[in-house]
Image (cartoon, rainbow, N blue to C red):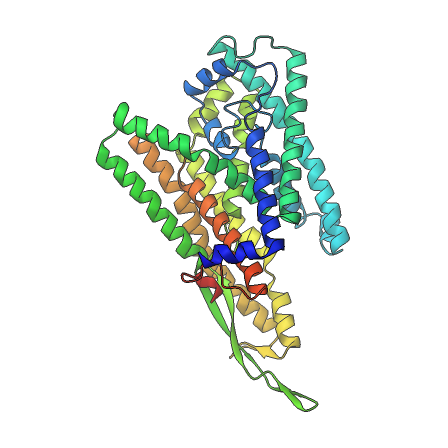
Length: 434
């Protein structure tokens, strides 16, 4: 408990944590405020009869879509807009120029991302309004007065809710403990845990859809996934680095050896979040055509666990793992900084040769990390489809929850160590920090 006591002893860190919890509580509270003009009881009945691919979307917004709340879109439009802007930064000269302009360029890209968020939220809000209206065919009375007024009202409400959620994420990143966007998704998924556990208990013990042994195996598999996520997230490939001795005046600098820690999973859970955001585009398209052939095709071929879904999902996770790693880790800049400080990798020439070697090692270690992310995200889908249980808290959810929790612990430990306190985990330290 010493780590928790140390957190409470630092006024700045204590305020950040309480501020973060306060904003997350507001987000969870907003998830229970329904959009006007919808019969909540009829909507719940329509969702219970089968939500198709919308079940995964509902998971990421903490059940807000099932309740048709003002936060039904969650933070996903912002994430989609961020992906598009980041990808454009590697393709279009204008965005490449902005990336090189430092803080001013970053602010301009943030502004463009916000406008993109509003645009995507408008499109998705329009789709959700038509999707909910289409539920009248399944359960009459979901929308008592469908029409243009209901559509406009719903779109404005959902877009406003998305903008507010985006603001909450940015405030957590700036004034809270950081990592605001991921924590918003984390809060949504964790909020679904009680209902998912209740559903699992009902399916096993009440409805007896599967055997008790299968249920125990499923729970054991979840704990195994958590353990492997922690191990793979903290795994490193260490490149040895030596520093030549330098004499400055009467003092001698350098002469020691250290290492460059290349994490097996440099991108963390970001590739999974990005890939899942892309996989929601077909469901967004299907919203515009409820009870049609397009909606039926999406629910058949793009449902979580289908062959097409798994193939595209796996490919996107691996692709985004490399893309995001390239965005956050620049081997050339690292090699140049090492050269300026008199550092070198034994057997490699400083400068370009060192950068190529680091890049080569990074490409190799990223592949098993990306494959691991894809496997953890996909295997539980196959298990759920084979067993026949309606349990959405699977591999993707566990990856995000565990990954965000580890990243948050690292940030708290950084604050503690800066104030000369023991780490948040005083005995079982996070291995990557040794």
